[in-house]
Amino acid sequence: MTSTAATTRFSRPRFALLVLAGVYPLITAILYAVFPLTEEWEIWQRALVIAPLMVSIMIWGLIPVVQTTFRRFLNPAPRCEGAAGSFLSRNGL
Image (cartoon, rainbow, N blue to C red; front, top):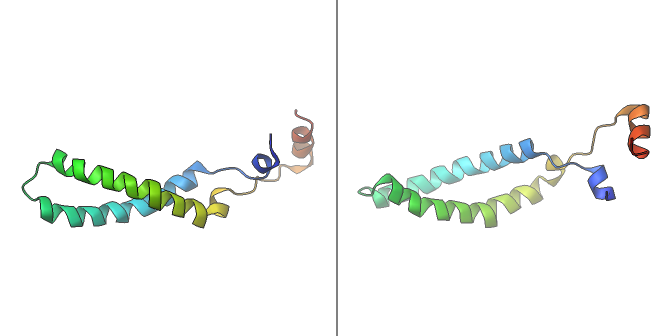
C-alpha cells in the first residue's frame, strides 16, 4: 500500500453528487438547443445526436474540472480511529 492511498480515500458518493450537479444544467442546456432544431424527429433520433455530445462534454470537460476543482472534497483524509485503531492498522491486524 502506498502512503497516498493510506492518507486519503476517494468518495464515490461525493463524486456522483458533483457530477450530477454538473450534468443536470448541461443536459438541460443541450435539450433547449437541440429540440427546436429537431422538432419533427423521433425521440431516438434526438438521443442519437444528444448522447455523443453529452458524453464528449463529460469526459473531456465536466469530469476533469470536477476532479481538479474539488480534489480535497473528493479525497478527504481518513477519520482518526483512536489509539487502538491506529495500532491495529499499523501492525496489519
